[in-house]
Amino acid sequence: MPQPPHPPRPTVPARRPRPGGRAALGVLALALAAALLPSAATARTGPDRATGHCANLDRLRVPGAAHQRADCLDGLTTAATVASGHTDPADWAGLTPKNLPVPAGVPGIQIDGYFPDTSATNTNHGWNHDAQFVVRLPDRWNGGLVVAGTPGNREQYANDRAIADEVLARGYAYAATDKGNTGPAFHRDGSRPGDALAEWNTRLTQLTRAAKAVVAGRYHRPPARTLVTGMSNGGYLVRWQLENHPELYDGGVDWEGTLWSEREPHLLTFLPPALRAYPAVAAGGPDADRAREQMYAAGFPPGSEFLWPSHHQVYWDLTQRVYREELDPGFDGDTEAGTPYCAPGTVPGCDADYDWADRPEEVRRAVGRIALTGRIGKPLITVHGTLDVLLPIARDSDVYARMVREAGRGRLHRYYRIEGGTHTDSLVDAFPDRLRPLVPCHRAALTALEAWLGGGHRPPPSRTVGGPTGATPAELLTLCPLGR
Image (cartoon, rainbow, N blue to C red; front, side, top):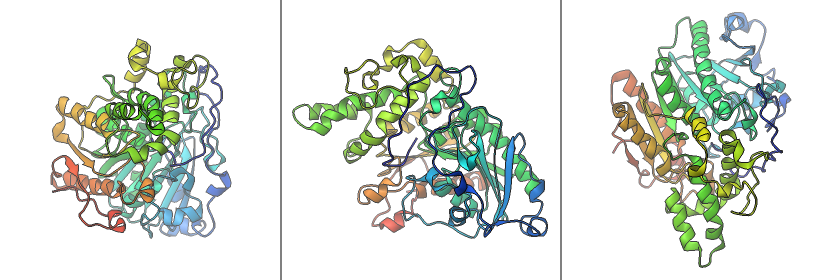
């Protein structure tokens, strides 16, 4: 659930009672609407629509969409869409290394639009409407479709650099959704605890079905293969879809997916201990060693200490407060999303004092509505960095892999623990001698999944993947061998 590595802290105003329907409140406007208007240089009009590479564009319809806009583009990857206004760089800021190569030369059709919804946190295109989506249809199609939900609480273009560029260059059609609510006040959407998170799953299912129909309309045949992928919260969606709607997909790649489980652990169990212990670690002195051991016990791995300061500053507190507000709004009474960075015992309802074990059964029921089971129905490959300190691997993917095995679905799963990987790839730029990017590991997993589905070539056994010996930082942007 990454945000940019050092964003300005958003202000979350006092909570109002949850409405009976979905709240309509714009938050976290990440770009001016004008920045997303297509330019004449790359958004084609006129004869090309009927006779050129975008033939039949005007007849393409996204089933169920309340609004859509289709454009014929010379390039569908960020090499072109940044200039043409068909992506929003603010959506994917902080998610990839700055020197990640960007493929070019992928002409085709882009359809932007939204499904009916009554919340309005997504301001892209000036639409002020949630349930926004993007569908991209390359001219040179490989017969497949990749669908994705976004990480964090970001909008529909958040995967463009990390995922969409690569799959479009491989010839896949691509579709992504904003999950139905965005921004740090996403928890205002819905009438009961857990509604906003549950909507994420509904929206990806909705988009998958619609995108399959659009692909069939564009290419005159349905996709031969449909894959689902995503990082962080998007990885959670991959897991949930393959557990609950395996009929829609052939397989998926889960990039450090968020774990929600009725049995624990989840972020509401390991973030509060970090909020309590880290200040003593940072202060040094006689309590520092004991506090550091408390961090380890909560799941934060030895060797990751250099990442703790930035995560304390940017991620842990805000993540705890907004997700706790979504699932357990009664903890802090009428205050919305707690008190930022309060020390334990200083104010009522301080999230550093949060104790999952003491919360009422209704909170567990809210988590149960979105919980994972491990009962996947199609092949799944998971990649997760061993130095992740937002979703520590020992409290997340290690646990999910065990859930899959216990559910009797281990033959459908491969799990690669990537040594030196962390939650947000842009941190590799700050620590090139300590971290490695996960984006090439995601691409290697996608290749392994293609071979698994296409020719029955089973991927290498699940394992911890070390870095390529002697690889340079530039080589690490493209190398991640999963086998021994």
